[in-house]
Image 1 (cartoon, rainbow, N blue to C red):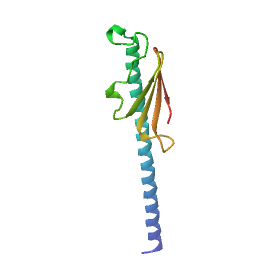
Image 2 (image 1 turned 45 degrees about the horizontal axis):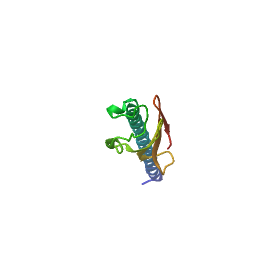
Image 3 (image 1 turned 90 degrees about the horizontal axis):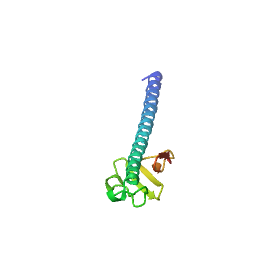
Image 4 (image 1 turned 180 degrees about the horizontal axis):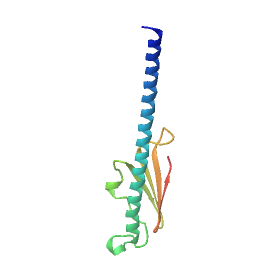
Length: 127
């Protein structure tokens, strides 16, 4: 083989290697973004349950204008998207969602927080 052919083979191998690395990075970023979106959707859903509890009269099993006594429904504490925990106060609930994919820092899982009030759900991305 001539030197030209060897050079073309080496360049081809380098290009294929770069393409593989870029493809892996794109797939990882896509999975991370999809998991973050799914955790946010779950937080909004769980927050809506908390608001329903707040508005429902105590005679019907609700909070009667208080979040006190509310818990995350057992089927939603762990989903295919992640796990969820809540800190409940009388007028506000803070829900933390931890996803399954690695977050922006490269070591910890995707995390988001929802602050639920009687009229609003505010979601903040933590990682």
